[in-house]
Image (cartoon, rainbow, N blue to C red):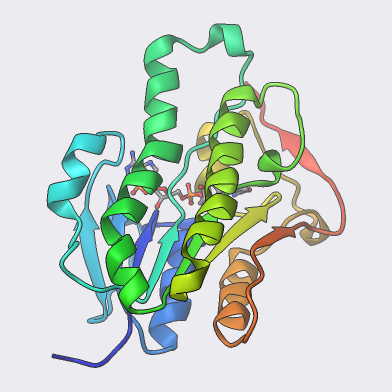
Length: 230
Ligand SMILES: NC(=O)c1ccc[n+]([C@@H]2O[C@H](COP(=O)([O-])OP(=O)(O)OC[C@H]3O[C@@H](n4cnc5c(N)ncnc54)[C@H](OP(=O)(O)O)[C@@H]3O)[C@@H](O)[C@H]2O)c1
């Protein structure tokens, strides 16, 4: 069996998860990427193992995740945005967003944790700036992201003795397809958004450190969004 390190990354078909996948492969990892549609990512590497899975359905996760592998690294990057008046979001949608943004990451972490402990591994949870502040129309999204951030901090206290490191990365506006389904997008001014490569660069830095940065908020210098025409 190969001695290469192994990472599992949810949300690996685009944006932040895809950039982290590329970075880890460049560092010699075998990456098991999870997402629904790999046809859109046009990234073919022998070390990129694609797991097509809809994380909206938590019951299907256990049989699709290779839990027999002792992973060195887990990145929970899956997530969708929703920024609407709360009363206009129907209960089915609330359940769906919680499944994708929160439940799936908790289940994947639960399934892989024993192996991560054996490897003294790393868990990176991609939360959001919305986990650190309060914004209008972000109640549901913030609820999921704050929960993942709290989960990260608590889990680190639980597993630090075993050598596992748990990090909450809280990005501000990052230029990815995240905004495709939203009514606004990043400004074109490059000072108003983060390049997802920078988040992957932070992970490289974290992996080379002897300490644990348990919580990091990454922000562009300036604020700027553009409302899309309806
Ligand atoms: N972009 C930002 O400004 C920003 C800021 C703060 C935090 N974040 C967070 O960063 C993370 C990554 O987002 P991104 O910006 O990289 O957006 P993105 O490019 O839209 O990536 C989202 C990823 O999640 C996957 N995904 C969505 N629904 C899924 C489902 N039902 N089942 C399986 N996979 C699913 C997508 O894959 P498929 O569509 O192929 O399934 C994709 O790989 C998210 O958790 C997001 O909340 C983003």
